Amino acid sequence: MNIENTQSQMRKGILEYCILSIVKRGEAYPSDIAEEMKGAGMHILEGTLYPLLTRLKNAEMITYRWEESTGGPPRKYFSLTKKGQNFYQELQQTWEELSGAVNTLTGSSK
Image (tube, rainbow, N blue to C red; front, side):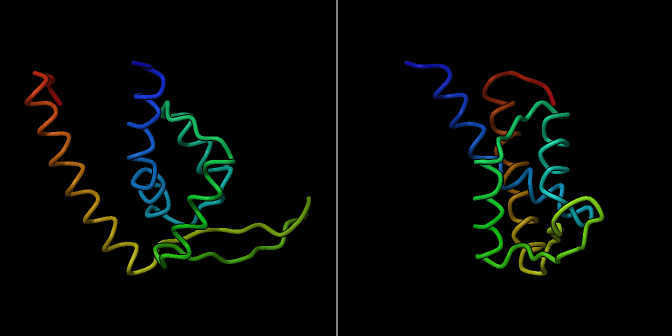
């Protein structure tokens, strides 16, 4: 078995939850999302982040607005929709149940 593949699959399963957690706190620019995730030890490449943002937008979980930039092209700032807030709450409950079960099974503490 390949540990890197297993680790990657574990991370992929929680990326949407982590992204929505950041956007939930207020409007977020993609590079700020990537930086915050990196700071938390969850490195995400642009090639992974942008398709996820597009998928969340197409599913009406997030929306965006354009803001002119003085130093380059306009920027997209993402925010959570009502549908996204409801989805986030469901993911949060699922995460709490899963992490609790895993901690119980592995003898880990929170």
